[in-house]
Image 1 (cartoon, rainbow, N blue to C red):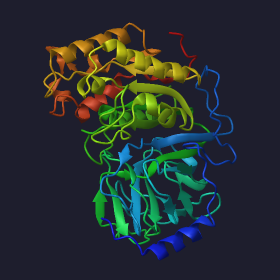
Image 2 (image 1 turned 90 degrees about the vertical axis):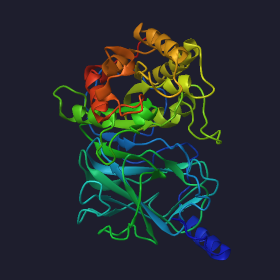
Image 3 (image 1 turned 180 degrees about the vertical axis):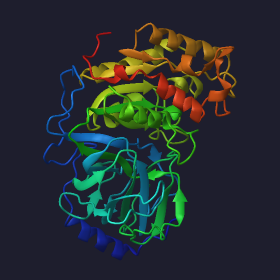
Image 4 (image 1 turned 30 degrees about the vertical axis):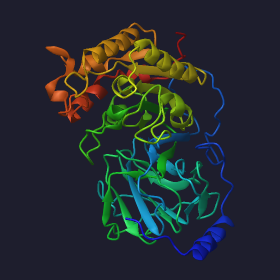
Length: 441
């Protein structure tokens, strides 16, 4: 719901006032602010040989999403509106910091008020009494994020529980360019008119949305966590068929296992899935910059995330099914190996999944199945990843192995049901997630 832009003179006056108090924004995407225990060193790292707990604590990703595109019909952004993003944590902590992105914006994004709170109830816009905290940027309550850039907030002293819904609220007083968003949140967030960042009762937030806007990460300070696992994937990882507001993506089920199972590494789980994502090619619809390929976004969405110790990759189906279609499985596996090589430079192991069945999907034929089988053959042979999780075997129908098991099929013959997502999480051997030396393939 967009309002007409403010008069030009008023808009410029507000922006000028804001510019006087903001910090200089780093040109590096997702570069964190300094501070005790800051994990902003992005240089090459030696391979880690254990998942031993941190001694003094550190910043670790508890939630994330990948900026996917510029939101349609938001040429002026969300001027004089408040966005309350609701996100679900996968790791607890004693402090938090947020990451905001104006990656797809064409003008500076002004944030004049931002807050962090616990939701009073699951998926609610109302805040738990006493939990509301202000968010600052370089010691100031305001920030301007240049077009194409991102910003990490100051740490907020705030007890973040595991599996909690956080309310991350931002208010923009002036028009900006198109909003950077993630369209398949499977989580209800909210909009309100005017500055409602401090509102605790939720009443002003009458507009519901299943998008995440501008917010791309929540890190927590944790003295016991082993780090985080970054999951790079497509719509299957994005969870586009999962029940809305149920936290039933396969990465949610994985987070529950890592939090509860004896001996499992205590990792945050960072979902970097984008619907329609490919290994090799970027672009979605008429936008060549939307939906960047895995090769293009790997540094941004994996290597720059706080505390990443291991990577899981679930990709390749869209390379086969989306135009222009890849008919050579060798091209897809070569692209996957490039991701592995880049992870190894940071000492990170990569677990890769086999490509799941899509038999019966509209437009899918025997030639596509042959490519899928060719990719899976290379993956299972150990010639692509450090280790393998066989999602194909976990989800396929034994009677028709080119198809999903009916109980695991959401109905479109491509995406899993909630039960299928649980089966995926149960299939992953959590011992394989423990940080170890990267293999030489």
